[in-house]
Length: 195
Image (cartoon, rainbow, N blue to C red):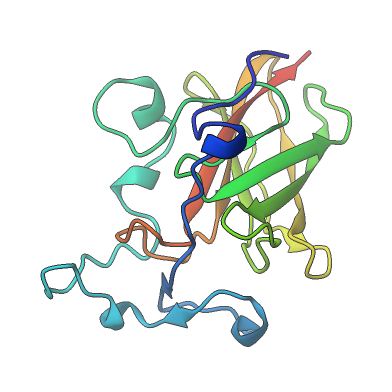
């Protein structure tokens, strides 16, 4: 437990960044039913009319844990307390639960993602997770699976190799280039205590 997340504001002053086009060369097979528009990366253009950089959704802002902890510029926001909060760009509200958390045990997270702009589920988000404690990573997650079209995802399992206050960062729409401010691409990190 800790401070409630208010980095996007609250109540009537809650900032709600709309979700725009996903520029990617890896649109999901069910793209037509995702309530997100997918376009080839080549279609993305910068505001000045030039082509954007093609980072495939894994640009410098998604380089991993080091940028979050070690100074320098990062697109990642603060790690959040509790089990509900907003992504770093105020596009989504995320909440999570987990199977019992213990050292050396498989832990599966159930993550629910909702778009702030219209309250609809973040369908087809392909939620994934990375976890770290200082420079120690958890054993990585396998691909998530969405439960119907609910915006609810089974993520994991992750395996934590030691006790401590871990950071677990959930990523949404990783295949989308993050070069546009309204890209569906998003991420939010939460503290998870591993006894």
